[in-house]
Image (cartoon, rainbow, N blue to C red; front, side, top):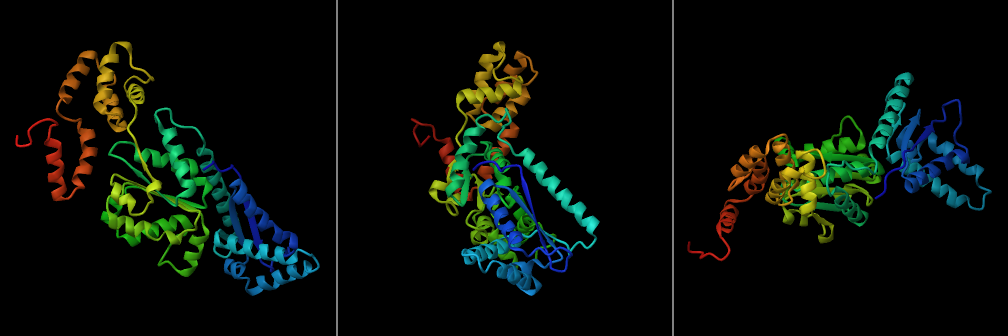
Length: 392
């Protein structure tokens, strides 16, 4: 996946009751070329329907049909006219499916112009935030993002799996940030588990569709809304999914979106991800290497890539204790920052045989998500020591 070029195509479709008649062959070539720019150069399209019903454009009905017929007559002597007319029709249908600004909705033209200007500025602002740079404190993030971007080329649904604190959300947010402007619509659904507790699946889905279609109110999925969604290339991220039914409700209708759309799901449950992803579409987040772990810890403890010389041995002990888990490294680094060596030794002594509260809270979620029998099995396994008699 490559970054979207920082350009916007404005496409104005006018009704034939305006002072300027737009229905020359040249004007109908324009949407064809603009859609080409969108597909080849990833440019963003903002359609503007001025005194014309978008449905008339989509279905070639009403006054728009008469005007279209006039333009077709002007091309009748062209040897490639049939192919050109076919291209016009397809372009008009595709553009009208994208939605856009409708002058019939906001009748005050000054207000409408202001809204369009603000929309363009907002899109440019989003584009400026999406670049190839990475936060220097996100150690190892580039490799993760590149591997997931590679999966997104062929997979409609990509799963990100791993233990608590390993960085699934951070990785998903980076992939989303870098790639969202390549899509006609995008939405990051944070904390699916919490949302499902307070809202039914249908309400969550309506909010997603509202975000993708940029509509104030979305009732039931009408045929019109389905067509619009089907025509849009969208990117959706579902973060922290732990229930198969939730995933079924939110992701099952992949046919709502066009084939070029992409869905990313993060979860600690590998079996749950296998329910919606192919085996090749699941990315297992691995722990940081020893050198990466020490670097991340040092950034939070000392504000530099390597530990201070007098803290080197203690820092290596902490990095080893954290087992390459980014959350543990960040929390402990921030906690120990500005402490003396004596205070470090005291804090590390406290950690023997127990975990840091903030880390334990995150890891506890995985345990709490187990069923009653699974909890018993987990505790049995956790209490078995290799080489010891099981009767003990």
